[in-house]
Length: 143
Image (spheres, rainbow, N blue to C red):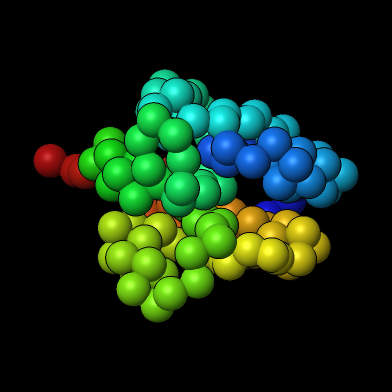
């Protein structure tokens, strides 16, 4: 699993302060560095300009909704996106995953499960990114 102490930075885009603070508290207790944005438009800019390892994204946001934020992030960046929303209908889950979210949790949720999912996504992402990196082998060409 991903090592939380490896300077993993998480961006939470959530307009409900109590939920954002709960997510932040649990993630920080697990060693993550966390930043919160409470609007879709400012969250999108922070996601595109910041150096984050994972994004936790609500759907019903002021400014720009979470679906559009997800779509625009996916146009520019490749990192795990975990949607956490009160929208429980299958159509919303399917749309979110179809736009590029890696996972979808419905509210209310278990904060411990959220942390476990974050760690699992980071671990998987780090393995995939690492697998795509060429090894530092030396190739000798004799001519």
